[in-house]
Image (cartoon, rainbow, N blue to C red; front, top):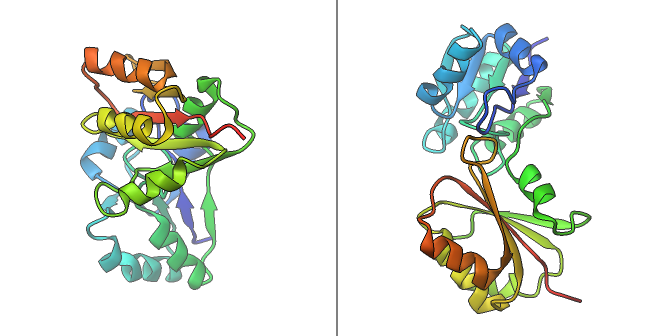
Length: 224
């Protein structure tokens, strides 16, 4: 039956790919990839030859109806991102929403998402947490930090290597240098690393050792 499949892909190690995900990508009529060049490596590794088209943040608004029409005429489409689960700080939400509006079945497969292993590996309480993803780069950033300083749940952030020190410095400024934090980078890859400690300790570490890779920051909530 024609539908939209949302398929998580490995965030690092290519072995973190389910048998079901491989089967679905082989069976659908078309794969929508965030960057077809990046996804081509995964497809080649698993000998998946299904045609691919690009679906990224710069073109997804324009192409929504095109993909919806394809599914309505009987095709099945799989949506993937460069790494992890689509729509989690990646393109995908708009297409899922549009499919639902058009009574198209959406089937999201379970799979890799960077923040889950980072959260579990942090040693910080996992019972209740808030996922913030990437903070605003400019507009609204200060206001968001002021609000988050009062948050009592564990907080999860994504950050690039170019802004991670700035972000940690701002956490220290708004929440205190003694607030406990766990910073994971390159999850499931060869140089995977998690650094834990107070904000001041972790900031010192990354100022002494140049930050590289994609980062997940797990920050302890305010003590009640």
